[in-house]
Image (cartoon, rainbow over all chains, first blue to last red; front, top):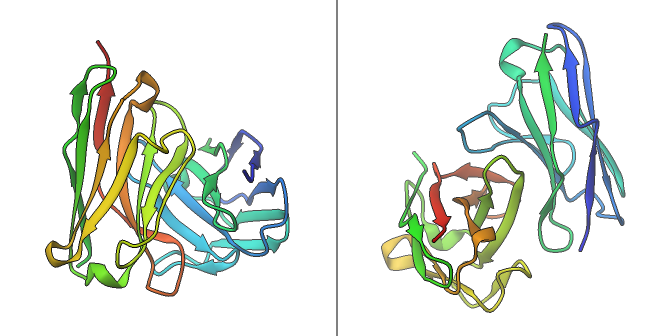
Length: 106
Length: 120
């Protein structure tokens, strides 16, 4: 099973700041990585697929990068509405998720 | 508009069975792989099972293999998850999900989820 490790567990930043979330795979997954945002009581929302492609309707503030084993999600300028848990997910071998990074806006 | 609506959740005793359904609308379901994903209370996301376009290929996470069975009825635009020998650790919100497009992989569409509680 491919294990995804996300860091940090929690990120606390102010509006307008830049957030960088990391996701590391236990083996190479090429670019078969997606990022999801989940707010309390809601279903997850697809942000990024294939490591760097933004899903329809996702603001340009969200960007993804990486390949192989190391990936990142960057939110260029945080807004209060970005407060959520962010999950990475691989589809190289079955489908697994990271444990999530909670983003808090001060 | 794409919509996925889950149903069938509820309270069940350990060892019991439950059948979840996912009703799809706004698209031709036979064009898409479909997925079940669950989230235990206060925990992260876990892929459970998925099924290919015509229902001939099915995949399961190890913890449910042999106990859960996924199926679909493209004529009715629906998918099901038969859950047998339920355990306390199967307690979760169960979501059905769909890819962004037939060729773009990423779960862009989700239902609202249905809660399954396994408890005596």
